[in-house]
Image 1 (tube, rainbow over the protein chains, first blue to last red):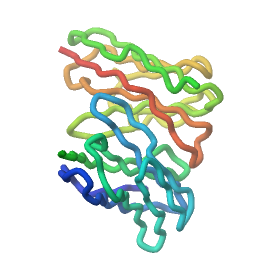
Image 2: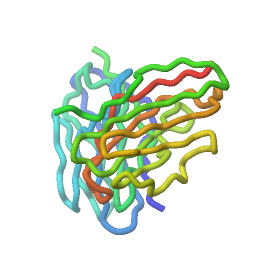
Image 3: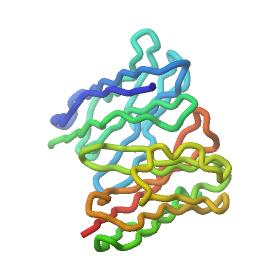
Image 4: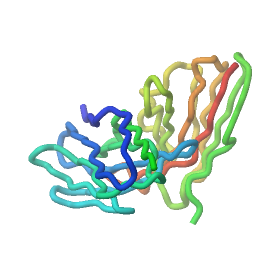
Length: 110
Length: 114
């Protein structure tokens, strides 16, 4: 069945550092890909998405490109802030509900 | 626009008691999902509905769990009797359809069973 594998955390970075969180997937067909973010004590918020190969999703300085050839959807940000500290979930959706990765906890220190 | 609404936000109960969690999806969304989040198991899909009809309940852990969607604007997840291992955060989400549409999540209900 469909699955998502993302790098395990926690990831600790200094403010203004470059962020990459790796995500790869296994799916039949052509799923939509998502990154969700969960801030402490809150629910999941959609961060960005891409619906077809080579699409780039972007929001709040975060970007991810749908790479069909490598079945990847890595999350990047050029300069992280303390306010980016959260848990990030990669997810895919084919013709079934979302399938999530296990989440990567990011801590950004000043 | 109002997002997905869940109530209560926090629930503390004793083992053996009945617990009912409530969800109001985004207006116009036809699909509704219930998830459970724990440290050990991460995010698990429990059940989802399309047009108020349960489509897949294979994630419901036991017969103690039941979910209903009596109309397009309301769903409940009930645990009877509750057990300490049911302690988790329960999320409701909705989407326009069951295809590749974006799912929008509610703030969750944090359940503690003593």
